[in-house]
Image 1: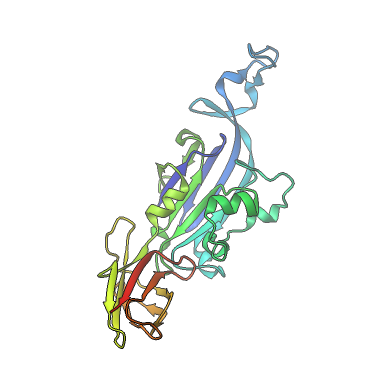
Image 2 (image 1 turned 90 degrees about the vertical axis):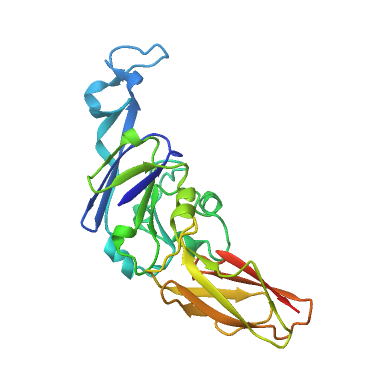
Length: 285
């Protein structure tokens, strides 16, 4: 399984392992090497050195303390029973460390694993704004599920860790540096694209077929997965607004009911909790 890391957090050590479908991770405090030494001596910048005896191991230029700040074990397969399990999902992981840490937060808060796109569906907030203004804390990581039918081996992990050298991962996890986890979500999760766009024409008393298919964000077709696709229109009538794909593709029909020549309707397509992955303009002739 791939694990992407962004470096937005202050430094801490992360141990992460995957045993079958069971994901476990723990977080430990670190101290920069230049501040570790003989605790009876003063550092040139003031204050005494941190006691080297408290350091359990070294990772790059950081000394790692022995006791975990936080640890969690989660069976990924149990997410399939999660009330918010869906196609194009991002399940968030929280821990009492990192950016905007919430001191005094009940431990139960960090045991939740909500789907980001369910939480932000109504407000249309991006992840940064939602966590900064609503939760007032930021996740340590996420679990990305491309489709409900995807085996967990096709899922993707992401953690906000200061540097790759601070991570220890089991042999079946590939650690890949990334700019941000937001970018990982954008470049990893599938999208729905219209076929034959970006615009179509229809006569005022006619009907036009609306076709769409699954793709990777870089445009590669996805034919081995199927899911329900959700559509909405600003005007006119969609014969079906929820369509199950076959071979990664699907279609519905649009009628310009109530529209006149020269009018246009915008049709959006996407997933249940992540709408608008593509737009299509239909012009009435």
